[in-house]
Length: 146
Image 1 (tube, one colour):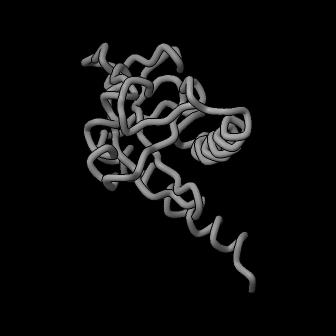
Image 2 (image 1 turned 135 degrees about the horizontal axis):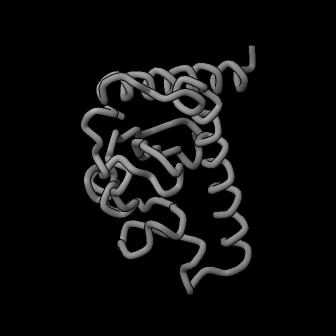
């Protein structure tokens, strides 16, 4: 955050300070990051971010699994949908838990979490995209049969 020109749109209630938001989509079968969208100002709603990009990348018969913050779009399924049974709910919970592991991977990088990021928005985005590439390489190495 630029401390000389404070921008209230950067304030994150979740972080209790300035921050950016990113949308990270993980493939249900590949377990790899299939889309990375951002940065967005901290105040943007999940559904607004989804509708800005990822929704348009989904095929006609594809839907995205997301948490409660994304409810309200025909291209989203959640664990809160009324028509799902317990077996499907458990499957969705496992998928969402895996996605949380990917989110945690980003939080392990102190350049984004432990220090005040005092650089440009573009540089922040470059850091996040670099971490995504490193995560992909780590994931592929850990899951290779070599």
